[in-house]
Length: 383
Ligand SMILES: Nc1ncnc2c1ncn2[C@@H]1O[C@H](COP(=O)(O)OP(=O)(O)OP(=O)(O)O)[C@@H](O)[C@H]1O
Ligand SMILES: [Mg+2]
Image (cartoon, rainbow, N blue to C red; front, side, top):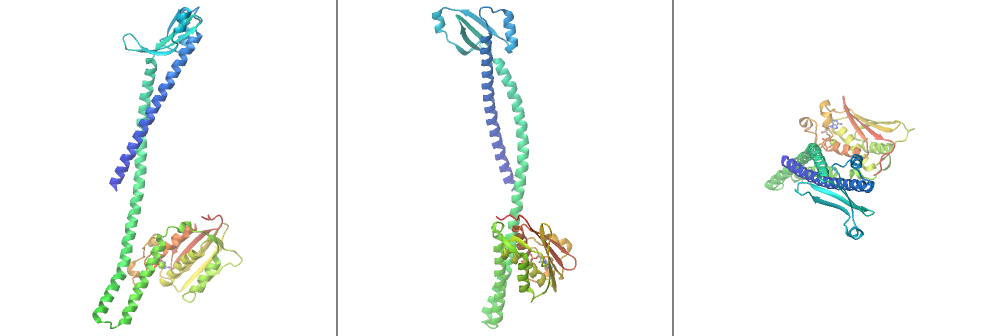
């Protein structure tokens, strides 16, 4: 992954460098153009402000200061009409006799006077050089800052990818592990059956069926967890009280359930009834599995939420393990749980379903376990 980090960084640095070069180039061209236009405008203005009939050295100094053109050369001459017709007017750039300086000139005519205004073009170039140095310095600082920010950004993204990659790897190894055990049991059962030539056939078939049920259960749970359209499921109005009553019907012959529901209130949320039943079934089945004799289900309504509490009196969960129980494949104390089968997927499913309902789940454990689920009342987005 460090390779990926470096590769991304080098590519990013190259792209930023090229972009800054393009920007610098474009800026310098634009700058040069605008300076040229500015200088040409000044020369043209100087020409219009000159009165060729009365032009004194004082006028020259005044004009120089007014238009800030240094040095300024003014050449006024007269010519006959024929010559005037052929004279080329406009802007010209020439070199000085010693070829050291470039001179920009503007030639115009007023009456039968030809006015030629000139200055060193290098005054412009000097200014451009100063601005170019400053802008290169600024660009270099910006380049360094962008590189630093870019590196931080790339580092965060790659770290996230690393975490997801690790999770995926863990998930895969957990899945393989969960599938390996029943497959190994089935293999050895079949081998024993083949060796003993079908004595005890019923017992072996029963054991195989149990393992197949186990495999079926885990594949269903895994498929459910990897389904990615859960967060986009269509939510309709669901009566939570009705959901709880249906679950009561289903489980009251397996465990004692006390319902605490104020019948004067309405408990309508936007949700998916089947998914909600699946989530709450997982919680109730855990209570049954983890040796509870009794479950209290409390439904309350506040100003902006509905609070559903499911409390049991089973073996409970140690406080330090509580933060992990919603993680995939997490089981509290495997040795303690050994005789109780499970994959550690049930509460991950609960978490995902509740997330799709924008509901929050908290868990406490003193004697038994208490799950507190908060469903938002208003404005549950319907995807
Ligand atoms: N009501 C409960 N009482 C005691 N422990 C619980 C209870 N609910 C969950 N746990 C603990 O939390 C762990 C995670 O529960 P979860 O439902 O995700 O997995 P599981 O029940 O072990 O397996 P699965 O539900 O996938 O068959 C359990 O292994 C158990 O240790
Ligand atoms: Mg479970």
